[in-house]
Length: 439
Image (cartoon, rainbow, N blue to C red; front, side, top):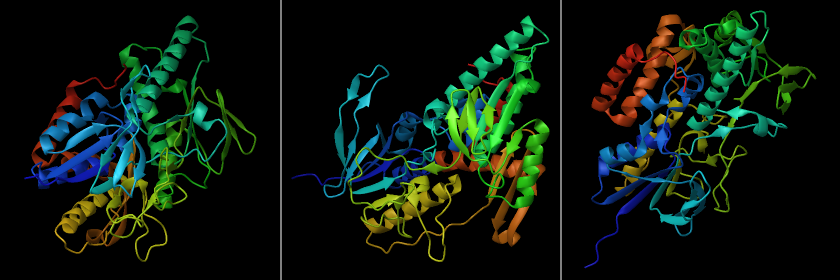
Protein backbone atom coordinates (compact mmCIF):
# COMPACT_ATOMS: atom_id res chain seq x y z
CA UNK A 1 0.00 0.00 0.00
CA UNK A 2 1.45 3.34 -1.06
CA UNK A 3 1.95 5.84 1.75
CA UNK A 4 0.04 9.10 1.37
CA UNK A 5 2.26 11.96 0.28
CA UNK A 6 2.87 14.60 2.92
CA UNK A 7 1.43 18.08 2.47
CA UNK A 8 4.42 20.22 1.61
CA UNK A 9 4.44 23.89 2.61
CA UNK A 10 7.45 25.82 1.34
CA UNK A 11 8.43 29.21 2.76
CA UNK A 12 10.97 31.25 0.81
CA UNK A 13 12.75 33.73 3.04
CA UNK A 14 13.77 33.46 6.68
CA UNK A 15 13.20 37.04 7.76
CA UNK A 16 10.90 38.24 10.53
CA UNK A 17 7.73 36.91 8.89
CA UNK A 18 9.07 33.76 7.26
CA UNK A 19 10.88 32.49 10.35
CA UNK A 20 7.89 33.09 12.60
CA UNK A 21 5.57 31.33 10.15
CA UNK A 22 7.89 28.31 9.85
CA UNK A 23 7.97 27.94 13.62
CA UNK A 24 4.22 28.20 14.01
CA UNK A 25 3.52 25.71 11.23
CA UNK A 26 6.12 23.32 12.63
CA UNK A 27 4.51 23.49 16.07
CA UNK A 28 1.03 23.04 14.62
CA UNK A 29 1.67 20.15 12.25
CA UNK A 30 5.01 18.57 13.12
CA UNK A 31 6.45 16.12 10.61
CA UNK A 32 3.96 13.27 10.66
CA UNK A 33 1.71 14.40 7.80
CA UNK A 34 3.32 17.68 6.80
CA UNK A 35 6.67 18.77 5.48
CA UNK A 36 7.35 22.40 6.35
CA UNK A 37 10.40 23.71 4.47
CA UNK A 38 12.13 27.06 4.93
CA UNK A 39 14.52 28.28 2.21
CA UNK A 40 16.99 31.12 2.64
CA UNK A 41 20.29 31.97 0.99
CA UNK A 42 21.85 32.72 4.38
CA UNK A 43 22.53 30.20 7.13
CA UNK A 44 21.54 32.51 9.97
CA UNK A 45 18.88 35.12 10.72
CA UNK A 46 19.54 38.61 12.07
CA UNK A 47 16.60 40.95 12.69
CA UNK A 48 16.88 43.49 9.88
CA UNK A 49 16.00 46.59 11.96
CA UNK A 50 19.19 45.94 13.96
CA UNK A 51 21.59 45.84 11.02
CA UNK A 52 22.64 49.46 11.57
CA UNK A 53 23.90 48.41 15.02
CA UNK A 54 25.78 45.48 13.49
CA UNK A 55 27.29 47.90 10.96
CA UNK A 56 28.75 50.12 13.68
CA UNK A 57 29.80 47.33 16.03
CA UNK A 58 27.26 48.30 18.68
CA UNK A 59 25.69 44.86 18.32
CA UNK A 60 27.57 41.57 18.09
CA UNK A 61 25.50 39.61 15.58
CA UNK A 62 27.24 36.39 16.62
CA UNK A 63 25.32 36.63 19.89
CA UNK A 64 21.96 37.64 18.42
CA UNK A 65 21.77 35.66 15.18
CA UNK A 66 19.56 32.59 14.87
CA UNK A 67 20.97 29.51 13.14
CA UNK A 68 18.30 28.09 10.85
CA UNK A 69 19.48 24.49 11.26
CA UNK A 70 19.24 24.45 15.05
CA UNK A 71 15.98 26.41 14.97
CA UNK A 72 14.32 24.02 12.51
CA UNK A 73 15.38 20.99 14.55
CA UNK A 74 13.76 22.50 17.63
CA UNK A 75 10.49 23.54 15.99
CA UNK A 76 9.69 20.72 13.57
CA UNK A 77 10.41 22.12 10.12
CA UNK A 78 13.25 21.64 7.61
CA UNK A 79 15.75 24.21 6.34
CA UNK A 80 17.31 24.22 2.88
CA UNK A 81 19.98 26.81 1.95
CA UNK A 82 19.37 28.28 -1.48
CA UNK A 83 18.17 31.15 -3.63
CA UNK A 84 14.85 31.12 -5.45
CA UNK A 85 15.42 31.28 -9.20
CA UNK A 86 11.91 30.83 -10.58
CA UNK A 87 8.41 29.55 -9.82
CA UNK A 88 6.71 26.93 -11.98
CA UNK A 89 3.07 27.56 -11.10
CA UNK A 90 1.73 24.90 -13.48
CA UNK A 91 3.85 22.11 -11.99
CA UNK A 92 3.65 23.57 -8.47
CA UNK A 93 7.39 23.57 -8.17
CA UNK A 94 10.06 26.14 -7.43
CA UNK A 95 13.52 26.16 -8.99
CA UNK A 96 16.47 26.70 -6.64
CA UNK A 97 19.58 28.25 -8.20
CA UNK A 98 22.90 26.39 -8.06
CA UNK A 99 24.68 26.88 -4.75
CA UNK A 100 28.34 27.88 -4.96
CA UNK A 101 31.06 28.03 -2.35
CA UNK A 102 33.23 31.10 -1.83
CA UNK A 103 35.63 29.89 -4.53
CA UNK A 104 32.86 29.59 -7.09
CA UNK A 105 32.71 25.78 -7.07
CA UNK A 106 29.26 24.23 -7.26
CA UNK A 107 28.09 22.66 -4.02
CA UNK A 108 24.49 21.89 -4.99
CA UNK A 109 23.24 21.84 -8.56
CA UNK A 110 20.10 23.62 -9.73
CA UNK A 111 17.12 21.62 -8.51
CA UNK A 112 13.36 21.67 -8.19
CA UNK A 113 11.21 21.46 -5.09
CA UNK A 114 7.51 20.71 -5.15
CA UNK A 115 4.96 22.54 -3.05
CA UNK A 116 1.33 22.17 -2.12
CA UNK A 117 1.37 25.67 -0.68
CA UNK A 118 4.05 28.31 -1.22
CA UNK A 119 4.69 31.39 0.92
CA UNK A 120 6.93 34.09 -0.54
CA UNK A 121 8.66 36.01 2.27
CA UNK A 122 11.88 37.16 0.61
CA UNK A 123 11.83 40.65 2.11
CA UNK A 124 13.33 43.54 0.20
CA UNK A 125 16.61 45.02 -1.00
CA UNK A 126 17.75 48.59 -1.37
CA UNK A 127 16.38 50.51 -4.33
CA UNK A 128 18.97 52.76 -5.98
CA UNK A 129 16.37 54.03 -8.51
CA UNK A 130 18.95 53.64 -11.26
CA UNK A 131 21.24 56.30 -9.78
CA UNK A 132 24.56 56.33 -11.62
CA UNK A 133 27.30 54.65 -9.59
CA UNK A 134 25.12 53.80 -6.57
CA UNK A 135 25.35 50.04 -6.94
CA UNK A 136 29.11 50.14 -7.54
CA UNK A 137 30.18 52.64 -4.89
CA UNK A 138 27.62 52.35 -2.06
CA UNK A 139 27.12 49.82 0.69
CA UNK A 140 23.53 48.63 1.16
CA UNK A 141 22.38 47.32 4.54
CA UNK A 142 20.10 44.51 3.37
CA UNK A 143 21.82 41.61 5.14
CA UNK A 144 24.52 40.84 7.66
CA UNK A 145 27.51 40.44 5.27
CA UNK A 146 26.94 44.00 4.06
CA UNK A 147 26.77 45.30 7.64
CA UNK A 148 29.99 43.44 8.48
CA UNK A 149 31.67 44.93 5.41
CA UNK A 150 30.68 48.44 6.46
CA UNK A 151 31.99 47.88 9.99
CA UNK A 152 35.36 46.66 8.73
CA UNK A 153 35.70 49.64 6.38
CA UNK A 154 34.66 52.04 9.14
CA UNK A 155 37.30 50.67 11.50
CA UNK A 156 39.95 50.86 8.78
CA UNK A 157 39.20 54.54 8.12
CA UNK A 158 39.17 55.34 11.84
CA UNK A 159 42.53 53.59 12.21
CA UNK A 160 43.93 55.63 9.30
CA UNK A 161 42.85 58.89 10.92
CA UNK A 162 44.11 57.82 14.34
CA UNK A 163 47.52 56.95 12.90
CA UNK A 164 47.70 60.29 11.09
CA UNK A 165 46.95 62.12 14.34
CA UNK A 166 49.61 60.18 16.23
CA UNK A 167 52.20 61.19 13.63
CA UNK A 168 51.00 64.79 13.54
CA UNK A 169 48.77 66.04 16.41
CA UNK A 170 47.86 69.04 14.26
CA UNK A 171 46.51 66.82 11.47
CA UNK A 172 43.03 67.61 10.19
CA UNK A 173 42.40 64.02 9.05
CA UNK A 174 38.75 63.03 9.19
CA UNK A 175 36.42 60.19 8.28
CA UNK A 176 33.74 61.39 5.86
CA UNK A 177 30.56 59.30 5.70
CA UNK A 178 27.59 60.05 3.45
CA UNK A 179 24.23 58.37 4.06
CA UNK A 180 21.53 58.57 1.39
CA UNK A 181 18.00 58.27 2.73
CA UNK A 182 16.35 60.04 5.65
CA UNK A 183 14.16 57.14 6.72
CA UNK A 184 14.60 55.07 9.85
CA UNK A 185 17.71 53.21 8.64
CA UNK A 186 19.64 56.34 7.61
CA UNK A 187 18.69 58.29 10.72
CA UNK A 188 19.45 55.45 13.14
CA UNK A 189 22.77 54.69 11.47
CA UNK A 190 23.81 58.35 11.61
CA UNK A 191 23.25 58.48 15.38
CA UNK A 192 24.80 55.06 15.98
CA UNK A 193 27.99 56.16 14.22
CA UNK A 194 28.61 58.81 16.86
CA UNK A 195 27.91 56.32 19.63
CA UNK A 196 30.52 53.97 18.15
CA UNK A 197 33.06 56.74 17.52
CA UNK A 198 32.76 57.86 21.11
CA UNK A 199 33.66 54.37 22.31
CA UNK A 200 36.69 53.76 20.12
CA UNK A 201 39.02 55.57 22.49
CA UNK A 202 38.44 52.81 25.03
CA UNK A 203 39.53 50.12 22.56
CA UNK A 204 42.96 51.18 21.41
CA UNK A 205 42.29 54.33 19.35
CA UNK A 206 43.06 56.71 22.23
CA UNK A 207 43.52 59.78 20.05
CA UNK A 208 40.36 59.26 17.97
CA UNK A 209 37.01 60.73 18.94
CA UNK A 210 33.68 61.66 17.38
CA UNK A 211 34.99 65.11 16.46
CA UNK A 212 36.92 63.43 13.66
CA UNK A 213 33.71 62.05 12.20
CA UNK A 214 31.93 63.94 9.42
CA UNK A 215 28.52 62.44 8.71
CA UNK A 216 26.17 63.84 6.07
CA UNK A 217 22.59 62.57 5.84
CA UNK A 218 21.08 63.28 2.41
CA UNK A 219 17.32 63.14 1.83
CA UNK A 220 15.60 63.83 -1.50
CA UNK A 221 12.29 64.70 0.16
CA UNK A 222 11.32 67.83 2.12
CA UNK A 223 12.09 66.28 5.54
CA UNK A 224 13.55 63.23 7.23
CA UNK A 225 11.37 60.51 8.81
CA UNK A 226 8.21 61.09 6.73
CA UNK A 227 6.44 58.25 8.61
CA UNK A 228 6.56 60.26 11.85
CA UNK A 229 4.65 63.41 12.79
CA UNK A 230 6.45 66.54 11.66
CA UNK A 231 7.19 67.68 15.22
CA UNK A 232 8.99 64.44 16.03
CA UNK A 233 10.90 64.51 12.75
CA UNK A 234 12.08 68.02 13.58
CA UNK A 235 13.10 66.87 17.07
CA UNK A 236 15.08 63.99 15.56
CA UNK A 237 16.82 66.34 13.12
CA UNK A 238 17.75 68.72 15.92
CA UNK A 239 19.20 65.80 17.90
CA UNK A 240 21.24 64.64 14.89
CA UNK A 241 22.57 68.12 14.22
CA UNK A 242 23.51 68.47 17.90
CA UNK A 243 25.59 65.31 17.53
CA UNK A 244 27.35 66.77 14.50
CA UNK A 245 25.37 65.27 11.60
CA UNK A 246 24.85 67.52 8.58
CA UNK A 247 21.26 66.98 7.41
CA UNK A 248 20.43 67.92 3.82
CA UNK A 249 16.81 67.80 2.65
CA UNK A 250 15.36 68.39 -0.83
CA UNK A 251 18.71 67.21 -2.17
CA UNK A 252 18.40 64.30 -4.64
CA UNK A 253 21.61 62.41 -5.42
CA UNK A 254 22.26 62.18 -9.16
CA UNK A 255 25.57 60.31 -9.12
CA UNK A 256 27.75 58.36 -6.72
CA UNK A 257 31.52 58.32 -7.22
CA UNK A 258 34.27 56.43 -5.46
CA UNK A 259 35.01 59.40 -3.22
CA UNK A 260 31.89 61.58 -3.26
CA UNK A 261 28.17 62.06 -3.70
CA UNK A 262 27.04 64.40 -6.46
CA UNK A 263 23.77 66.23 -5.74
CA UNK A 264 21.24 67.52 -8.25
CA UNK A 265 22.32 71.04 -7.34
CA UNK A 266 25.83 70.17 -8.53
CA UNK A 267 27.27 70.17 -5.00
CA UNK A 268 29.89 67.54 -4.27
CA UNK A 269 29.82 65.81 -0.87
CA UNK A 270 33.17 64.11 -0.07
CA UNK A 271 32.73 60.60 1.32
CA UNK A 272 35.16 57.88 2.35
CA UNK A 273 32.18 55.62 3.06
CA UNK A 274 28.89 55.77 1.19
CA UNK A 275 25.68 54.06 2.37
CA UNK A 276 22.47 53.84 0.34
CA UNK A 277 19.33 53.57 2.48
CA UNK A 278 16.78 55.29 0.25
CA UNK A 279 13.84 53.09 -0.66
CA UNK A 280 13.34 49.36 -1.06
CA UNK A 281 12.21 46.94 -3.75
CA UNK A 282 11.76 43.20 -4.14
CA UNK A 283 14.81 41.49 -5.58
CA UNK A 284 13.92 40.18 -9.06
CA UNK A 285 14.05 36.46 -9.79
CA UNK A 286 16.32 35.15 -12.53
CA UNK A 287 13.20 34.01 -14.40
CA UNK A 288 9.91 35.80 -13.73
CA UNK A 289 7.86 34.03 -16.41
CA UNK A 290 5.51 32.58 -13.78
CA UNK A 291 2.25 34.42 -14.43
CA UNK A 292 2.20 36.07 -11.00
CA UNK A 293 1.12 39.71 -10.89
CA UNK A 294 3.80 42.15 -9.74
CA UNK A 295 3.79 45.82 -8.83
CA UNK A 296 6.31 48.31 -10.24
CA UNK A 297 8.46 47.74 -7.17
CA UNK A 298 8.63 44.02 -8.01
CA UNK A 299 6.35 43.09 -5.11
CA UNK A 300 3.84 40.28 -5.55
CA UNK A 301 0.30 41.63 -5.70
CA UNK A 302 -1.93 39.88 -3.16
CA UNK A 303 -5.59 39.84 -2.28
CA UNK A 304 -6.79 40.70 1.26
CA UNK A 305 -6.34 37.01 2.18
CA UNK A 306 -2.64 37.47 1.23
CA UNK A 307 -3.02 34.94 -1.60
CA UNK A 308 -1.47 36.06 -4.87
CA UNK A 309 -3.98 37.26 -7.44
CA UNK A 310 -2.95 34.56 -9.93
CA UNK A 311 -2.69 31.46 -7.70
CA UNK A 312 -4.66 30.59 -4.57
CA UNK A 313 -1.94 28.24 -3.32
CA UNK A 314 0.75 30.92 -3.32
CA UNK A 315 0.87 33.54 -0.57
CA UNK A 316 3.16 36.53 -0.08
CA UNK A 317 4.00 38.32 3.16
CA UNK A 318 6.26 41.09 4.39
CA UNK A 319 8.18 43.51 2.20
CA UNK A 320 7.72 41.42 -0.95
CA UNK A 321 3.90 41.60 -0.73
CA UNK A 322 2.00 44.42 -2.43
CA UNK A 323 -1.15 44.55 -0.34
CA UNK A 324 -3.77 47.28 -0.68
CA UNK A 325 -6.53 46.54 1.82
CA UNK A 326 -10.18 47.48 1.17
CA UNK A 327 -10.73 51.17 1.85
CA UNK A 328 -7.02 52.00 1.55
CA UNK A 329 -5.38 53.83 -1.32
CA UNK A 330 -1.79 52.88 -0.60
CA UNK A 331 -0.14 49.50 0.02
CA UNK A 332 0.96 48.44 3.47
CA UNK A 333 4.35 49.87 4.51
CA UNK A 334 7.45 47.65 4.49
CA UNK A 335 7.83 47.29 8.25
CA UNK A 336 8.69 44.46 10.60
CA UNK A 337 5.30 44.79 12.30
CA UNK A 338 3.58 44.24 8.93
CA UNK A 339 5.60 41.05 8.37
CA UNK A 340 4.78 39.68 11.83
CA UNK A 341 1.06 40.39 11.44
CA UNK A 342 1.01 38.90 7.95
CA UNK A 343 2.75 35.75 9.20
CA UNK A 344 -0.01 35.26 11.77
CA UNK A 345 -2.70 35.85 9.14
CA UNK A 346 -1.20 33.38 6.65
CA UNK A 347 -0.79 30.80 9.41
CA UNK A 348 -4.52 31.03 10.17
CA UNK A 349 -5.44 30.87 6.49
CA UNK A 350 -3.19 27.87 5.79
CA UNK A 351 -4.87 26.04 8.66
CA UNK A 352 -8.29 27.07 7.35
CA UNK A 353 -7.68 26.14 3.71
CA UNK A 354 -6.56 22.65 4.66
CA UNK A 355 -9.65 22.20 6.81
CA UNK A 356 -11.92 23.38 3.97
CA UNK A 357 -12.95 26.40 6.00
CA UNK A 358 -13.34 29.95 4.68
CA UNK A 359 -10.29 32.18 4.69
CA UNK A 360 -10.26 35.51 6.51
CA UNK A 361 -9.05 38.85 5.21
CA UNK A 362 -5.93 40.34 6.71
CA UNK A 363 -6.50 43.26 9.07
CA UNK A 364 -3.49 45.49 9.64
CA UNK A 365 -3.12 47.19 13.00
CA UNK A 366 -0.70 50.08 12.87
CA UNK A 367 1.12 50.17 16.21
CA UNK A 368 3.07 53.25 15.19
CA UNK A 369 6.67 54.03 14.26
CA UNK A 370 9.72 54.38 16.47
CA UNK A 371 13.21 55.59 15.62
CA UNK A 372 16.15 55.10 17.95
CA UNK A 373 18.96 57.66 17.95
CA UNK A 374 21.24 55.19 19.73
CA UNK A 375 21.80 55.99 23.42
CA UNK A 376 21.09 59.67 22.77
CA UNK A 377 17.33 59.66 22.22
CA UNK A 378 14.32 57.78 20.86
CA UNK A 379 11.28 59.32 19.19
CA UNK A 380 8.12 57.91 17.69
CA UNK A 381 4.38 57.68 17.54
CA UNK A 382 2.08 55.00 18.87
CA UNK A 383 -1.37 54.15 17.58
CA UNK A 384 -4.06 52.01 19.12
CA UNK A 385 -7.46 51.83 20.73
CA UNK A 386 -6.03 52.25 24.23
CA UNK A 387 -4.83 55.74 23.47
CA UNK A 388 -7.56 56.69 21.05
CA UNK A 389 -5.42 57.20 18.00
CA UNK A 390 -1.93 58.66 17.64
CA UNK A 391 0.34 59.57 20.51
CA UNK A 392 3.75 61.14 20.15
CA UNK A 393 6.36 59.73 22.52
CA UNK A 394 9.94 60.63 23.28
CA UNK A 395 12.66 59.85 25.78
CA UNK A 396 12.58 56.93 28.22
CA UNK A 397 9.09 55.72 27.28
CA UNK A 398 9.97 55.66 23.58
CA UNK A 399 13.22 53.82 24.31
CA UNK A 400 11.39 51.23 26.41
CA UNK A 401 8.83 50.59 23.67
CA UNK A 402 11.57 50.41 21.02
CA UNK A 403 13.47 47.79 23.03
CA UNK A 404 10.23 45.89 23.57
CA UNK A 405 9.77 45.48 19.80
CA UNK A 406 12.89 43.33 19.56
CA UNK A 407 11.84 41.34 22.60
CA UNK A 408 8.47 40.64 20.97
CA UNK A 409 10.34 39.49 17.86
CA UNK A 410 12.39 37.04 19.93
CA UNK A 411 9.24 35.60 21.49
CA UNK A 412 7.58 35.32 18.06
CA UNK A 413 10.40 33.22 16.59
CA UNK A 414 11.44 31.29 19.72
CA UNK A 415 8.25 30.93 21.77
CA UNK A 416 7.69 32.37 25.24
CA UNK A 417 10.04 30.19 27.32
CA UNK A 418 13.07 30.27 25.02
CA UNK A 419 12.40 33.89 24.05
CA UNK A 420 12.34 35.10 27.66
CA UNK A 421 15.53 33.15 28.38
CA UNK A 422 17.27 34.89 25.45
CA UNK A 423 16.06 38.29 26.68
CA UNK A 424 17.61 37.58 30.09
CA UNK A 425 20.86 36.40 28.48
CA UNK A 426 20.89 39.57 26.39
CA UNK A 427 20.71 41.69 29.54
CA UNK A 428 23.65 39.81 31.03
CA UNK A 429 25.69 40.15 27.82
CA UNK A 430 25.07 43.90 27.82
CA UNK A 431 26.83 44.09 31.17
CA UNK A 432 29.74 41.68 30.72
CA UNK A 433 30.45 41.96 26.98
CA UNK A 434 32.57 44.70 25.36
CA UNK A 435 30.66 47.82 24.35
CA UNK A 436 31.75 47.50 20.71
CA UNK A 437 32.54 44.63 18.36
CA UNK A 438 35.84 45.57 16.71
CA UNK A 439 36.62 42.47 14.67
